Length: 535
Image (cartoon, rainbow, N blue to C red; front, side, top):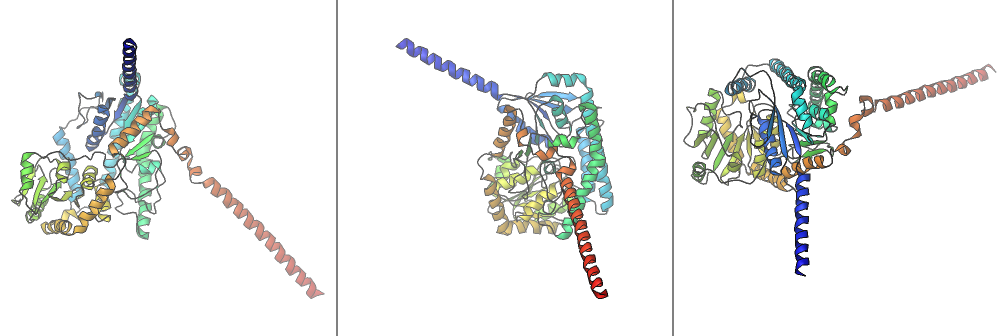
């Protein structure tokens, strides 16, 4: 009896060990990550670390002249596309970018035409840079052979860089997009119908409730984006698709055929719009409960008394400001009874108040969760916006470039943020009044607390949702069953132009026939009357 029990126990242990071994083997996968440098890398790396914790093996493809993506890592394999070396250091690149942002955001005497012309130049330069990286990657036979022999099961790509979806097509493996932006438009436009009557185009600065004039402008702006895509952006990439992928399908078609779109969007924040089943919304995926603050910062928070603290951060990149503007901001903040903690690395403003503490880095998530935090002055980047929503802190919006204006405007439309206007002419008085409005008017905090409650009230945390759909795509070797048939229809069929043409022809033919019949009847009646008169 004892022997049989021992055998049974050993059998049970062996079965469990075998089961766990099978689970580990089935659960671990080789994932090829194709990121974008800069703040995009910071975001996707958060997701990557979660995937690493689940046992997946990650390989990152990067250009050798990337600034933020590391050249070596203990966590994942780095495959480098050898480009021409940068002639500038990281600091010089950042300064060059800051100068451009300052020129675009804070110059007082720039015409709309000059701004548009400069943006067009940036679009062209970005296209050329991306195309050069893609061409160099595919021309590197050793690299491509190495990637092919690794037998990846998935490509995790940032859709802003086109090389990811092209690699997935070349390697014949599924692709999951992580992000919401293509080069000059939102990726929503590639996934689902987007009625321009209530879906504002990127950079339109409108809500989903547009006037007649705004709807007209929305259509014109959309048309302009499509022209830029057609004649500036996709012509370059389509030629690369023909050369390296041997396909006549353009890049936009490859994008639409992606298996899963992980979008950093939550409809608590975003305006409602049509969606497709392979569009998965993970807005706030990076949000988490707070950690303990460093002793120095905790002491500063505690010393604020009943007045509380205002947190001021313009993100990872924008850590300095033009000297005159920085002094105006410091003067406005100095008038506040609240303490202010400001992420800033520039020269200390002469007007800095005793209530303001400047630091080169802030534990932003942990500060926003602190009970003494009364308001958040933010530029409107995705991370900061969702952390503010997660912790229920009202926002004073200081948008500078990109999608930041739209992000703040969405919070403003929900009564959870004050949008600072005309930054080149910002005054200390205007900033002071804006902060006072948000803190003293309880509706701002109440509205943000409501958004926070809605955002948190989910069955699964957005990070776990993202992980599930990545692993789902790996398990099932794609998710083509979630793709709409419209992705494969030619333009004239998608918009029913052939049906409209046929029905129009039938209607026209019917009208012509009816006209002839009516004309014949009228003639016959008139002829009959004439005969009667003659008789």
